[in-house]
Length: 355
Image (cartoon, rainbow, N blue to C red; front, side, top):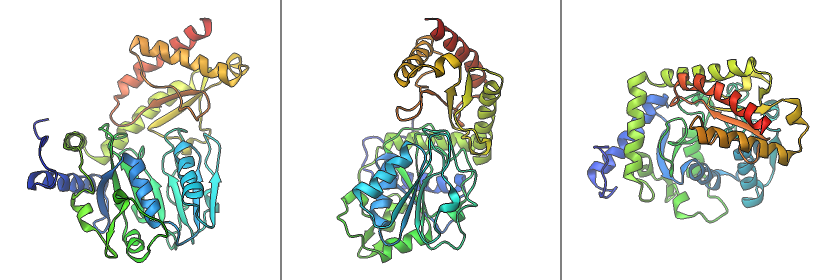
């Protein structure tokens, strides 16, 4: 990467300009309103989301939606670490969504737009009240650049370069609405904040964070890699193109699922199925009769066969999810490769069955 400013201070003019350009291009490509702030923060999506939780929660009731491991992690933060008063966890099993109609408009709501480890996503933001009193905290790490985010309904949005951009991790993107900024400037949380979580100075937003003046030292190599990803997104046609690629990849995989008798999408409601992190369950009767440990061993045999053949890597279900497969169908994947994968999946299932 010729434009990687290695060995330079991130506070020098050129690196600062590069960081600011990355923010500006992210805004343009994602269609983020000009009134929203965008910052580059430490510790990937997790760091971005937790700095928002630690800095803003506690002034209102909180509803946490949890239907996969990341949402469950935010629920743990809210109930056991922050110990928030009037905090409800609205949970659902893997492959399902909780009742979105139960969300209180007066409460802050925490949710993942796309459940990376369950393959279930919210179909839209219609369930969020336009005249809500609370803030919406949206973990969009496997949705950004592959699904349409309704910015008018979102106050805090986080994602990492790792997922739909195909970039390196370690840094998170934090997007704040004017309502979120108002919360930051008008609320002092009753807890100590680590330096990397502090977004205000003297009761005012630290605007430097949202101009590329990062809280701690960023990797300029990772920044250059993210810029390469944005270059590619621009070349292929922007957000509409990346969404279309993800949809095409999902359709190719789902068409195979629909004609295959040993596998189903973990998400039964079509409108809730992710087009990026597609989770599959094995429905073969012999597999269903196995206990969970044996099912996980079977899936491990399948994925090992695929890995050894070079056909697919790391496609086992998340350790907290039901035993099965998880196939990444985001925009960085070629549809032809998804189509090439499906016969290998049939082969791995048949081979693991007879081994």
